[in-house]
Figure (cartoon, rainbow, N blue to C red):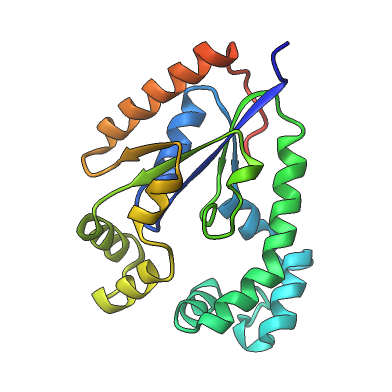
Length: 208
């Protein structure tokens, strides 16, 4: 008897193309969950995550409208290991709880984008893992262009995560995203087709 769902943990590093990979899976019909999206929702005023962040960092990280200044919070946590650990302690349990609740509503193959999958030892929560990787110089350029950061700040954010080689040793599948978007989409399509054959079709789900 086939299980009602097969959950794949999708991860990578900052700037390697996780979001593009998740979007490719979604376009192919896979049910998807984004922990980045859950984190943004948890940081909205009135949510448990918002209250936990303000309790941990104080009102200095709020804008005039009392929303969280995400850019400021990002600079704080990427420049201070203790601050980053504090943010993770405050928000990760809430994010993982929401992830579990969403996945429980889905059937078939589910792709969950989990940025710190290996760093937090979450791989056992998934039936398989896939890593989106790229060369450090390509990663650096993408981060600088996307986030408007100088090289020093971009490298600091890369250094806050595990080296790609360490993650690759743990991943079931690694897709190297050093080329263009069309190549990444081709590799995602091939992996998706393999999952479809193994697990009998991909129903549409409630993407989050």
